[in-house]
Image (cartoon, rainbow, N blue to C red; front, side, top):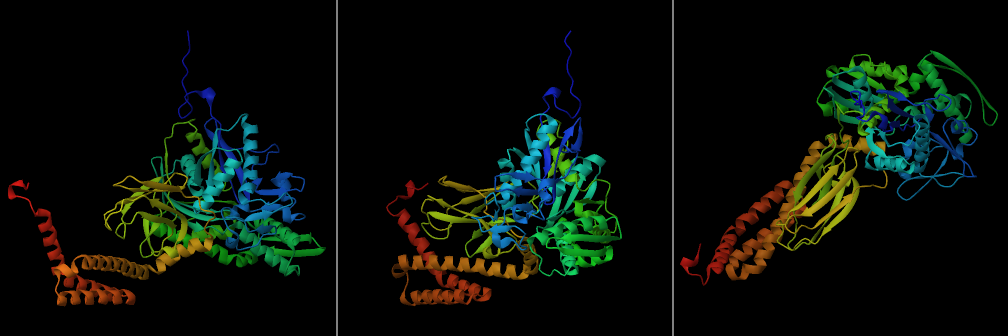
Length: 618
């Protein structure tokens, strides 16, 4: 008698056809890969049992590529060819780099390049080498080829940085099942592991970025309410602050590249030790024969980095404000990232929220574990009995007449999202429009970041305001954007996948939100002025066209003079650019042309009915 197979609940319906999928945490300092085996997530170690892969790559003149611990060991003696913290360069241009690393940067087309003995490398290529090492580790451990991976990114990564991460994965031979925000992955791991419900804040301080997310966990639904962060703040900055101090103690106000790398490594080790001890002796021989012999006390270190700790709190306040909640409303704070082991960080979090943070999950592994759970579901190995609702970090829209930014998708909208808005033409007979895609929070287009530009041509010529152009924004679950435009009477259409050349730096992101809040009233006034200016120009154009067509036929000399005077008044008001003057001039022109408009209407009706018998009318 044949036996019927019954799959274990939550597992593949064909157990022997388990699909190999992993979650990857591509980190600034370390990277990890995790998977789900027998229903349980676990981080995959390398052949030596190490779970953390240092995110460091060394390139040799012979074409050799070393990734991980071997590359990190070369940081001090070969800093020019050993690339660390490359995540901070993803999607960035040379002008976006605030701190010059030990290796040499080149100004590439759209994205910064790195000069190495093996040739110029982009951050995408370096990241691909790290991802390739993780893929090979996973395939060796799992005994087969991967179906795909969920790769995590900081919540505050913009369009360019997400695209760069996805490109790196493709270059490494990895099919990206989804890009997942790191705090969301951490909440997923925590929520499923602890069956937690309520409002949670995920405080994610990694090696190169800081993110804060506020999530609601209810009945298997993971809903991101708001995100904020600092895209250029992380554990590396704490290391750098301590390294500068150590250089001063060693009498090296301007260390060379090799000495800087050695000092950074020493500072990182001392920082990690100070998380467990009150003081750490630092005795090293630096390159160049310089001796370093000093004791670092925790209080000294915390004084050096106090401003960095403080920099994490404004984004936390912003995220709570966007979510419409106060610190006491939070049921728990999940810490993510190795830098959150610092006692100063934990004290700052506890002081802000009035409760100790949750520390029972490994902050290094929790993101990879959450990504592995999502990858397992997307691969079809388990029923997806939970739902992720992520958000977009910055508003998206287009530039409209007058240089205004019209927001179509506001920030913190749940992903995936699609929204459309109708626009029209400004001039009679207009047959094309240019669409500039923007990202940012201000009211003026030149105060936002331009992401892409495309044109819609072939619009049928018609009077201004009659064309109906529907602009549609679609952002997928990975946070990647596609914009389309359709003229609805003719069906002509155009679209663009937004793949910007490089990303927003931290200062730009922070300024977008800070400026938007600081200039709310000013922006509103300026928007009213620009909208009224556009309306006044349209009225002036329409009045001039009507006057030219019928002024001599339908108006007397005095009437014509009055209308011309009202038009001149409006032109002057538009030059003065004040709301009161423009509104008053528009009202004056409306009054001056009211009788003219009525006569034109009567004339049009008379012409339309001329020669027709009354019985023929409907």
